Length: 467
Image (cartoon, rainbow, N blue to C red; front, side, top):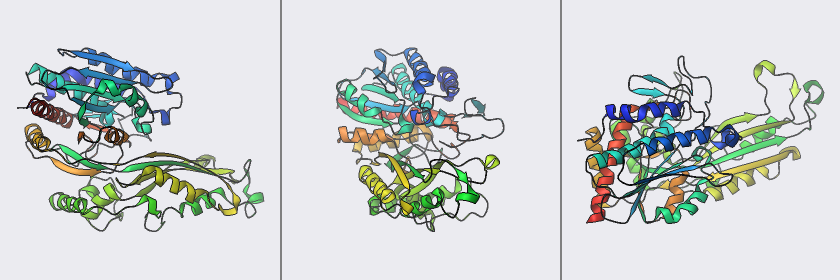
């Protein structure tokens, strides 16, 4: 029987989650003055205060701060079972920017509840995670379910690629101890009817490319035809890394062969769920999607290298666009990389392609942030059994296994430090959850289901530790 109900979640967590939802705690990449603004600190202290109000036999709640870095909230719940190994439960509290105008009646930092869904920036990605992790542990102790030593780690720079996390993992290495299980609550779900376990994540390159041709803008009637357009040069450079007709990424260092097992998994998902990737996207009528089949689209989202232009600079809004040859154009490029591609090597290849033999000898600058992808290690028998029980107990349905198209740098970081650790990457980001987009949504029943699944997995972990 599930240890937690929606009523429990509403009573013990919802008010604080809604308060968190109202805090514009943008990740440092989107708020260069995050320290001065204080929103990240406010969110951290809010969650720390809520954590201190929980009921545990033996708990420590500490906010760790390193100079110049975002804080990390660490909640250590000591074991009620035998064994010395540690389970780490991970989430983050920093948020993406609003992106644009939200739908009527919705705003990014004014939470709105409609039925059993809450709309606000950060509630599903990933504000719910601290509540889910600690409510799971609190329910275990309240119901006499033994658990091993657990460390809940909530960082505040994930949406910027987790640049602060490695330093904190160094500081916390001794405190974390013998990590044997890692539960990441920042991943996705294809449906809301079961626990979804992530088998792979793509890596990422965040590239800022600037092409400059003038020291200041000039009347287009005077300069065009003489001074090359910075936008045209930008287009030429982009053609070096992406086929403009097919969207294929052209650099060898950004591509790899897809292992047969993942091709087979995609075929199985397509057979069971149909064209599930296409069906969840808010595309315009008549749009021709990339990919030749449901299976192909699953692989494209999880194993293909892709390029998205996610930002532009130096270009005026249409309402104030004068007849000016602009001095520069900046594009922000987001590459998604196959799970096994070396992100550093890929970044070097992109930098080389964009900066060598620049057309018209224009001035080009390239800044690259790289994050590796991730493959889950093989599951031990006890964890396979536990996940099956967790999904059936919480959702009355067997678990699903799938790759995800996003990136969670923490998993790659921890995997390198603890190569033999068992991983469970899961989450609530299902259809219409709109992470990073407008109208982000948390399905409360999914949050409760994931929380109950965590209870089952942690109980099984404690049992196999004792045996």
